[in-house]
Length: 90
Image (cartoon, rainbow, N blue to C red; front, side):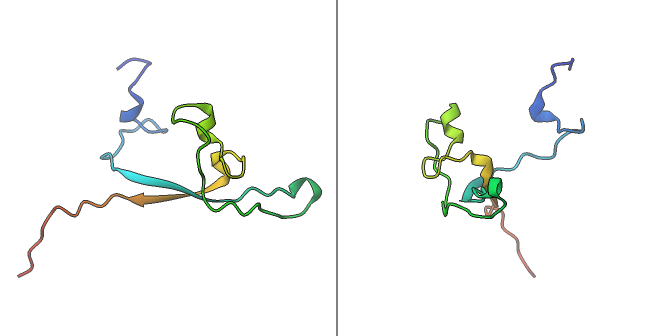
């Protein structure tokens, strides 16, 4: 592979990535401090991120409920567990 390496096969430090896992990502409550400019602390109460537009557009990164960018919402990752394997105890 040349200078345009396949990014799915490498991580930030250049080493090969581990086995790909399917994780479900949810963006929960908004944590943006709206009172930071005046030295206070106040959040808007938005409980969960809802995309403003279709996936793949810039609007998909903005919350329809509070207008904040998705990065202000708490990220929650749920691992997709494979329950198909069976184990026997004896």
